[in-house]
Length: 212
Length: 212
Image 1 (cartoon, rainbow over the protein chains, first blue to last red):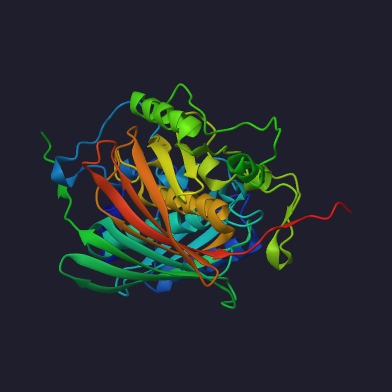
Image 2: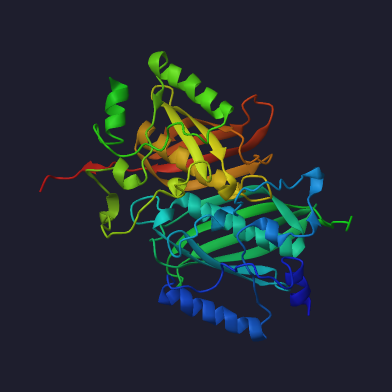
């Protein structure tokens, strides 16, 4: 199916890599319920649950970076920023669902105490980073979008640590090799808007590495 | 001096709290040299080196949050997002210098391998978060700016993990209870601009807690 081929461009087909976008003991009931709700939609509604590995290097295995960017292969413990904290529930808990034909994503986000800004609330920068990351994965899967050109955020309300925010991402248009996306982050009951944002990503096709 | 009173509004006068904005073994020569350069300027040029504790709670001890926001005092290990990673050199290494009369800040930033986005480079979101944090501290000290209203970033070039980016922040104006700030992030030799951004923060005065 197209969902399968899409995910295979995004990660190795068979893998032992740990998927961090799976429920764990730190997830609150709201987070678990929403996860189950969207997991149901993957069966009938065309949604795809995206795996989330420790490093972007695992997501783009076998693909060549543009501009001759070489992937340094030293022994550093490379981590994608939004998976930098390994302790369950302390940092980022999130999972992204993507809808290929609608060019939409949903990200469920439960910030932990390591993401604090104002006492008791998520740092604005932690939401900014997750918006950028959700835009980035959406842009890549919806149209080879690779690099953030711009990110504009208006903050409306603070997200309490331990609660759940839902990020709704839409690809608005693809034009002149750029993807234009929008995001609204809100509470589950949609009564509280946390932030609205827009992002522009540059399209650049990754090539397969030659086997040599 | 005004620098002293300023810092005392920002952190306890005498403290055993660890200051994370001090050189450690992971800092590269560029980072160390720039740090020394700005430290010299604190002696003659009116610059102030800001301490950086694990939690914002430590910075605003004895002050009351607006809107009746209560500081949850459970046993969570609360960390400000940009100090979420404790291992030296793996995550954020940064130090902020502030100039009260010029209403300027400089932030020296060395991203580690846990801040990765594209292989070998800092995640755009990690820079966005540090811009927000540098804006936030500058806004607070330059004029009681407390909450991010908006954050707009244009990305120009990727920051290699392990290198140093310098964030130059200016308060452009203070109007209608809002602080308007700009930031340019660039390499030490100023030959590479990594990103430009603007931020708007809302002014809200923190009151001293009554001793009762």
